[in-house]
Image (cartoon, rainbow, N blue to C red; front, side, top):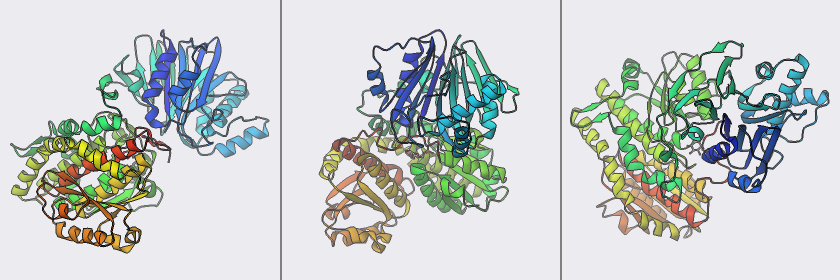
Amino acid sequence: MCGIVGYTGPKEAYPIVITGLKRLEYRGYDSTGVALLNDGLKVYKKKGRVAELEEAIIGKDLHSSTGIGHTRWATHGEPSDINAHPHISASGKLAMIHNGIIENYAQLKKELTNKGYKFTSETDTEVLLNFIEDIQENNQCDLLEAVRVALKRVTGAYVILLLNSATPDTIIAARKGSPLVIGVGKGEHFLGSDASPMLEYTKEVVYVNDYELAIVRPNELILKNLGNEKITPFVTKLDMELAEIEKGGYDHFMLKEIFEQPSTIHDCLRGRLDATAGTITMSGIQDNIEHFKNAKRIIIVACGTSWHAALLAEYIIEELCRIPVEVEYASEFRYRNPIINKGDIIVAISQSGETADTLVAIERAKENGAIIFGIVNVVGSSIARISNGGAYTHAGPEIGVASTKAFTGQLTVIAMMALKIAKEKNTISEERYRNLLLELEAVPEKVAAILKSAEDIKAIALKYKDAADALYLGRGYNFPIALEGALKLKEISYIHAEGYPAAEMKHGPIALVDENLPVVFIATKDSYHEKIVSNIQEIKARKGKVIAVVTEGDDIIPGMADDVFYVPAADEIIAPMLSTIPIQLLSYYVGIAKGVDVDKPRNLAKSVTVE
Ligand code: G6P
């Protein structure tokens, strides 16, 4: 996590850096800092949000044409003014910001302490910075060479940006494991954790790869690898507009993103699904179709909300394609010596395409001969680039920390992918295939219809805002939605919530049920309907408050539930894409009612680039 920004060129650096930091705050927001080069180094940093730093430094000398900035999600050392980045080296000549974790920092710190170095912060960043400076002084080399030598000794993940007061127009950058984009302008360069800080200035960007170093000057971009060989920068064109990363009249990005779903799902389907012709065009699947058809199993790795999409993928792919699917938390998968055979298909699902655990998990699997298929939202991200094939979700930039439109984008891709493979494998009847294509095509319209009831959902949310706990229950295809509902509520309202398979609740959570416990049932009309009706009875018998997501026309559950959210009828495979919408709105309105900053809830970050 953490966001990094840099600028060097003829413009004033500070406004570019501070605006860029605001756009990257989703990556972490417990402290902020900038370093500016003019007549020497000026560093301003502070615990708190970007706006607080901005306010605190009004009237200071901010003039500079080369600057870097950082918004932090604390790893080593609590959020504080001292631990905030940039850090300054012992000599006072270098300033550095860092996104990632230096795993062997304790060893390096010991070596430096023995040499007499003193540290003001608790961060691994200050250790790496002084390690670099120490090498530079001992070897009498330039800064880039010192960085190169230092990074060869470092284990962990990093993007670093460095300023040197001796070279006022230069930023040195390096990456391994955390993202770095360099925007190429006319006589200027921009750096960022993603492209958002540079959107209004340039659409030409270079995605820096792992183990690459960059020397960035206004008129020059030199890329090298850790072996000191020059690399030709590969410039790609950004397909993103500024409006996509603005709130567009909504109070919060989360609400905007929830309301964007009819169009983002439509964008995801567009050009791929043709219900009239009965076709699904997905080149990432087509290119690997023999692998998918012959796959003995598929392993899906993901984290957070993306893991819930993975779980639903297991249900759908096994049902339609008859291929065994295993779903793994990436953080567990990467460390537990899993059995991976040559030709195994590993699907990575990730909104950001940068989640450290997911990225490393697929790197390991790839080394073992697996075929990596990425379902990713951020175009050009690390996971997208390392994958052998893949499909973008095309949800556009998702900025609210709680994932909404990216999740429904993932479900859309999964449904298309399963249908395409099933058709190729002949594991689905023509009638069901055609029917599911029509069902998928109708999803955007049905989502739009659900969003019209946002005010009703808000009224219900207000009734439950003071709950201490909540339970989310679902069966079958709606079980992953129950997990997702509980995650959403705890993320943005801080109400403790658990998701459970509805029947499994008898083996534990039922002990929590009393008249104060809201129990949210995801209970759309499907093959489990009668069973879930029984589970609702079990909760009612213990006086639990039942909130149910039901299919329009359901004449049983509304008579039993305390509150009901209706969604249009849909095939049970498609229904989760609908039942998740009221659940998102419920969490949003509860979070707002509780005064939580739903776009930036405490302790979380959108892009988790540390393990
Ligand atoms: C963080 C975010 C979640 C997201 C998860 C996985 O925890 O707050 O919204 O689901 O990371 O991220 P990814 O980008 O890999 O989907």
